[in-house]
Each structure stands twice: as structure tokens, then as C-alpha cells.
Length: 189
Image (cartoon, rainbow, N blue to C red):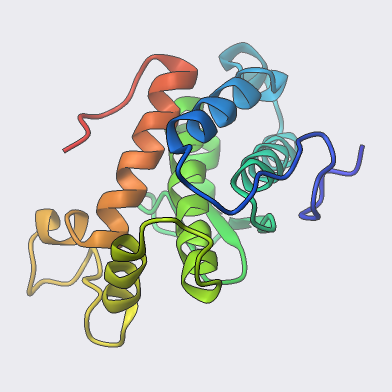
């Protein structure tokens, strides 16, 4: 099977309507539970390349369930150790330190979180894709120049970064997927 970032056929693409979010989240959880490479024992023994391939497979599945195109998952060799990953509008970048050192549940949370940002972008670009127009309006406004709070912006505290609309939604999503797959996760504030 080709696990590159192309629409995968191992999941049926979900319609763009998000009225069934709990169902879609449950589908992602079940799909990720079925990926051997996301299991702790296999992750521990996997090479960096195998881990990235596993993350790509997980992203392909989640994207298809969500009804969007999957993003390439790449390694960020220049990320600081505390930088887990980010979505740059074209790909999901996973920090090398995180990929090599963090528990698979944390890396999966990061992948789900950054994939949610890809979903948010897609929803903004495709009116009606996400059923809650208020969500999309708040995401669009939050992404406007000057409105997004960077995590290392000294003018703001971490809670202000985490509680802005696009991050609050992405943290909730990442934590929900991590909790469902591994039974772990942070509080969904």
C-alpha cells in the first residue's frame, strides 16, 4: 500500500458535514488503534523512517475520515526540543526530538492536533464543509494577520495561546484522539 500523502482508499472519505463529530472522532480512534506502528511496543522498536511512515498512514486515515486531503508528514530537524510539531499550510512537520524521544501517545496527539489545523484550513477554504459557521468564522478571524498568538510570544501567557479559537479546538481534538487510542491525555480545558 502506498502511504504517501494521497487520498487513501483504506478509509471511505466522509462527507464534509460535521454534524457527526463524535462519530468521526470515534472512527479516527478505531482506525489509529488498528495501526500496528502506533502501538507502544512497535513504536519503541521502529526507526525514524518507520515512525514517519506510520504517522503518514495515520494522517491519511484521519484526513479521509474527515473528508479532506491528507497532508505530507515530514521531519523537522531544526525544531527545538520543546517544539513538538506544527502545520505550515502545506505539511505537518514533526519535531525530530519529539519523534525520537516522546511517548507515542504524545506524538499521536501532536499529529491529531496539527491535522486538526489542516481541517480548520480546509473548512475556511470550503464554505459549508464544517457545519458550524460560528466555528469557521472564529477560526478565520483568529488566523488573520495580527490575531494569532504564537506560543513563544512574550506579550502573552501560554493560556492565551492555548485558549484562542483555533488552538482550543486543536488541543481538544488532539487530547480526545489520544485519550481514545491510549487512555491518556491532558485535561480538555
